[in-house]
Image 1: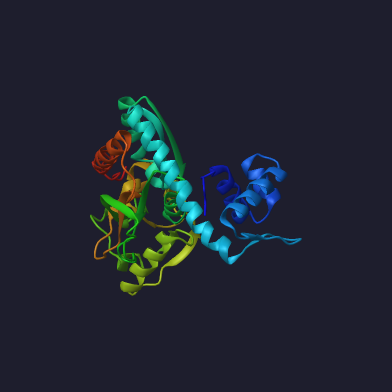
Image 2: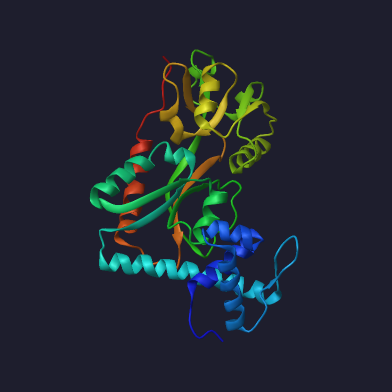
Length: 312
């Protein structure tokens, strides 16, 4: 049985399990290798079980180590949450807020929301990481982020994760970016069938590409992809250069190069992106986190009020 909780020992054990060696764990924790070994040895004595099997090449978890690893992660995440919430109680207008945000949100509505947050809570230390949902959600669940701005596509999405609270900010309909001055640019809306014979600039392997492929499958068309990029600004610039057309979220309309790109609604398809703010279900919201909920929703609505660029 554990008589006391020494977080340093758990952190050392977790680092060895994640990095596969005592040397790599020491480098990650910025302590000496003997110190890591001592922490793990003390933890093994306290739990009464061998947690790690040492070999010349790599350290691997024992069955007891596998069990403790699961609980160690939850313990350290819970302690971090407790420290943050206690700090918030002691001083509600300060503390740390870690956000994971997908790239096109970081380039559009999120800066306005963060500016308003810092105006209300100037002593809050906001740290934002730009991450797509497949990377942001594990970080959130692991306790390395407090909130995340994410997206998914209802056309391919699965059941919600019960460990997370998901507050929908907007349904972001997809649009077609076409070069200005073309026949497509003169149409009020465009259907997938209208694009069947055109060259496409599409996302690389990603949720976005999976959703686009599914929409094309349902429309019975096979897009001719001539270029791939997950950078919407680069995608829009390639459209402006006449390389092809692109199906993009409505949200990125403000990023379209003026005079060279026209965005038109994509009709006769259910392809849209659901944008949401997500946080862990068991976490008590600090005043800053609670305000973020309101500010993100308002900033999204402001972003969608920006009209699609018209032809020059």
